[in-house]
Length: 303
Length: 298
Image (cartoon, rainbow over all chains, first blue to last red; front, side, top):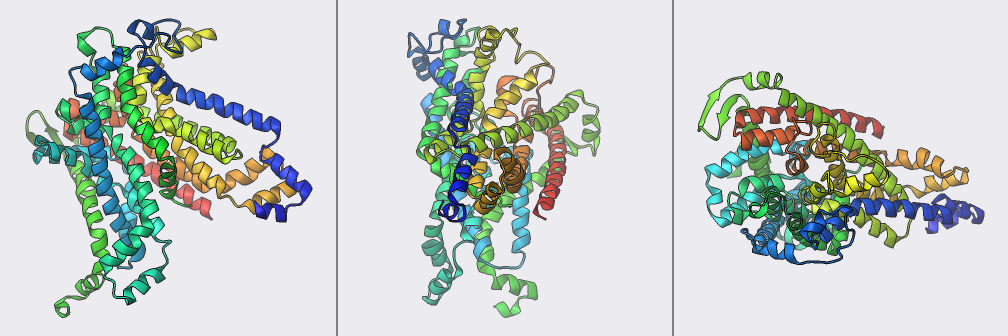
């Protein structure tokens, strides 16, 4: 802001601020448009949460009820007493996502650091090959991976299933790219000084690089957690038993199988399931919004 | 020990630290990306099924059959249509929203940015659950709201005419968040001098946005275009939840067809062939976009 006041005169400054749509009318207009759009895009989430507290008759009422007048906990009781382990699904999701985060962060930190700070023959080509996989549709690989997982009988044990769910995410080039971008900004002098003091390569990585990379790694961890949480197709394929479903798989199961053999879909139950499935991730996002933003912007290729 | 190694070996040994650091990552890539990719391409020349544990080499037969297969044609056509509809809508709308958010204060910025990103956090499966209800023809919210302005009830999910648009609408709600974050970050880093100069030169809002801001944003716009295209090419969970590709394949996509063919019909040779077609399609589009990108950097 200081540069603007020095380069732009007083009357120009007024024009400048008007230029940023800060006139009262412009401001009002943009807030209005933004708020209407935000309401439209958040309406489904509102509808789902309030729907989970509505009676079956009210969910099918015309005109619809915008605020539950007689809130009920019935749908939630049905969700947690139904013939499926809802809490176990949440636990599965948390375990699989955390396992994915740990694996991805360790591997991406080493690989990204290697590409950023070590010169070796072929490093450019190897990095380019890796980066170009960002543009591959990963579903093509799921068939061979599925054959591998079932061939190794990984899904016959609980830890094996978790591992099978997490491992394919290791091949995401996003993390390597993000760490490399960030690691390139660390001055080489730091490492030269450490080398003079007799630090080993591994010590330079763990004692100097990792602490300095911490903000990027935190962003990567938070972002990967969300990606792993919503890695639906693979979890759907790997989870052969209802007790091994992750939350999205479980919610899709409740939604697609009419509950309790009823002919009509139980909308209240669906909404309770959806809210249950979304709740953890939404709270997680609101707590770590800055890291999400950092993860997305750091991972973007600067043109 | 090193003295016995050949020139190449010595070179690798000398740089072993670098190679060792990238080794775990690269091994993961080979195991979970390159090998599966090679196997998938190989499988596409076989007739193979999970049901009968047998594989039969059929050469290009799977591919020949695909191109006379109506279901495949519809999936291919729809996939391209999804990209052509959802990607421009996402980029355009997120750009407008970002330009509106950017001049506001820090608190308002982070509030709106968060609000528009929330659907992406919830994910396609969870959103589809509530949209199933919203789309309901008799007691759904959408038809009720449309009824208020005099529009007749629409069979959103059960008609060949609207199922594609219903799926596109839901996809749009969660593709919007990421570009907004990227555009806002780029807007915050714009060259302030150029913007100031345009004000001094007497440019109004529209002129400045059109002639200065948008050209400066070009690299980010192209990046968003590329990543969104890849994303929409892979659309499937919304289809899985809402329409199962129907009615009569009107909303299906290549990835959904891969899922159906491999894991419902268990013909994984044929599904691999569809996957290879998708791969080629994405490769072509990506290369075209990269050329666009190169030109923008001149």
